[in-house]
Length: 430
Image (cartoon, rainbow, N blue to C red):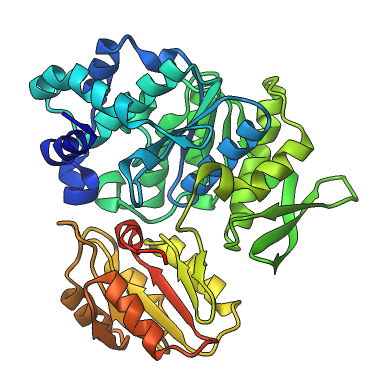
């Protein structure tokens, strides 16, 4: 098989969560263990950092990878899902996995695929670990796909675990309370491995403290030592002022990820770096600053309050659950604009009514849908939105929706595309 045939085989042959939803998720690590055992357990041949959370885990993963790379470490990065190209999921020092490796890897394990019928995600995790081992990375930043306890990535024993936050998402799989969701995420906490918690809330505090205690895992809170003293936007950068306890001098960090919600993620990243230093990783303050200022450039992260056009401003954001949408709305309220145009598409298994109830009534809506089976039909989304007095038109194709919004927009308007990673992934950036 050539590369294109290989990708088509992987997409069509294997159950894929992004396409079919919960049916592709297995509460069992058996297939991943079998795959990695067949490959000689590549995940045991490199050091890693494991990152879970409802929101922010992708941004935190990319920021940490950029910092480690800047500090001179050969750094692997595994994230999901991809926006445009499968190869985005697996990178070393910001470079995507090469096509030849993907083809050779798939050919190598094809008999095992036919035998045990793993999911798409189980295969990609095994592929990433095999690639990182072959590339002899110094460390890999590994983002959890879903939950933590039963996520395929959880076969690793990392140097450090990070849980960014807990919010309402994937309740059909992870549980119907924040405590239950936290329990699943806390599944990445390993014996004697330090864990950083980004945001601690009342409902999850006991879960994390008990799990860390049971595992003898040192527990660090990102908000205990530092807080955000202020922030501002300047030239498409977010400049965040950080105050540390018992220190009078504040530190300023320039982030090329301009969403104000990145200030929370920054606290998590800084605490993770502090713990890594305790673990004898050589990361100095200048390398932290440079990595944060060049995260997009070094790692290729997209879709986080990403401004792709000015006058009118067109913004892409992959926010799709309650907390993510709340953060987007906060950002919109701080953005100077004339009218607001929102192009939204969602998938069927999200809390659709909750998300829609958070959106402003004054915006002009364009209801779209991604080209995947899980996508909620745009017409259904419009009907649900109408019940909440959100008015707009159905334009299923996101690029046509952008075209129509631009034709109606004033130069001082904002056009936002949100609601689904897959919808954002179909935007043709021009």
